[in-house]
Structure formats: structure tokens, C-alpha cells
Image (cartoon, rainbow, N blue to C red; front, side):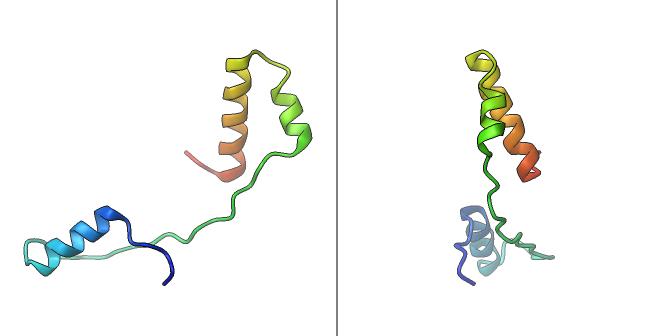
Length: 68
């Protein structure tokens, strides 16, 4: 696998090797392709104040990338 192991998982594995933890299961999520904004979506966001623009951009990116 070409993905690097997150530091937390690496520490957990080290604890397993030392016998201080028992492993039950590990799930690795696949990387997703990033969805950016189209020009029209950016223009829609720019019709507000600076803070409103930033919030609108953030909301649109979360919507497009299904982030919580």
C-alpha cells in the first residue's frame, strides 16, 4: 500500500508489538478525489462580505466533498 501510516496508528502498532494492547480491527479509508469549485460557484460566493464569502466557500466545499 502506498499510503503512509498515520502517527496514531503507528504508535498503536508499537504498543501491540510491546504487548500492551490487543488489536480487534483496523479500517483504512481510501483517498477520495477532491472536488473544487466552478467559476459560477465562486462568483456566487463573492457577492457577500469577506466573512460571508469565506463561510460560503467553506460550506460549498464541504457540500461538494461530503465533509462533516
